[in-house]
Length: 329
Image 1: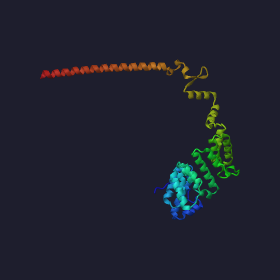
Image 2: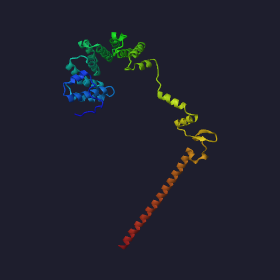
Image 3: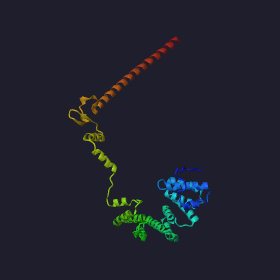
Image 4: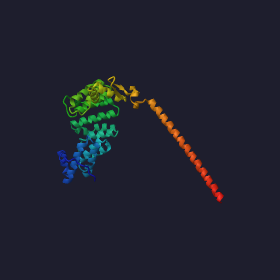
């Protein structure tokens, strides 16, 4: 089995204690290798999900009977939008543990597979009642997304309206719930309400996990100016008048020279032609080119005439040789 390189600082002890407990069923060396691969999955899943998926597949081949490994493989597949594979791994993990905590992400896989009606059906199953508060909020988000998939915007908005949305207490899920609500309102044309809820999202989004600030600025008509353009303007302002003239001429493709008599720069096309023969006009260069071409053509014709004369002489010599041969015969 092909292995992938593990970062030098990864020991395998970085994983959660409950996962380490599951890995005790494996031989020590194998458990250590699996745990190190799982650490790499967790480390890469946000920044490089494809690479995280590769590490997850290695861990899966090494320990497919460990629920934590099946769960990690499921999340890696989910991050790379391999929803069918992710759903299969989540179902396997659920069978092994009997836990329902993966129920919302399993429903979201159904959405990813283009089956929002199945996701809605799962939102009404008894498993939802066994979820903790965070899981129930997550299930509500998935159900609202399924409603939107089906074009039911009003129903999606109603689905998100809940005590958790109205609560003034900020929880880990608060920003995402408010953001989803604001986005649904905006999609339904309720711009003023959407602006209000994007603002509330910003208040609860301390980690900047959403782009609510950008969405609110867009609604308010705020345009962001490229800082690089400002830097260019500042650099130009710092130039002397002389340097700015040179820069402008370079941008326009115009070559300037310094006229000592007038003590100023002038475009090259106004330079006196008698000052330097190298500054001849384009018309003069064209005339010269035509003269050169005529001369070449004349030489070519002369060479052709010489060649014809040589051929004639050769033919006469050949005929003379033939006549001489016949006379001798």
